[in-house]
Image 1: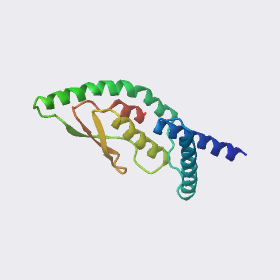
Image 2: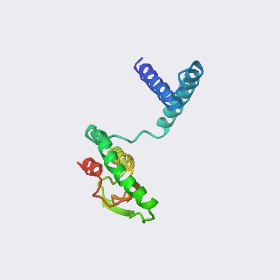
Image 3: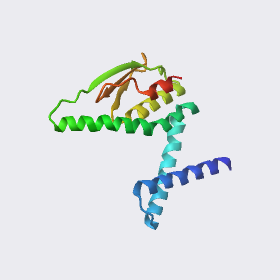
Image 4: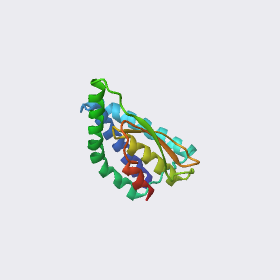
Length: 158
């Protein structure tokens, strides 16, 4: 019974995501969304039986999402300056940076930390994570303009 409610909840969430994706409310989209949600749940449940999910973030790490709008707005200024400079014929002073990030290993918590670091750092227009070395814990990211190590990386370190 409990599993049934769990699967029903997932199915409803996936249908909701379908409507967000297609941005159109109609009977045809409801049927298509229901079918796509069912196929997604079957594929997800089958794959989780083969390879269990190894993603366990701490709730405090998810609080970083509230800081993202301010970071995006701040980095938009950098992007606009870079685009204006590019239009004026100036070279964009982009660079690569490497920093240590304590998410080495293959545990569920380390996987979550790396995933969130990539998502939170790459969402801003100034930086893109190129890669994380799982053994050494080094993060390579590209920036349009040199700034301090992204705050979200520091927050995930805590």
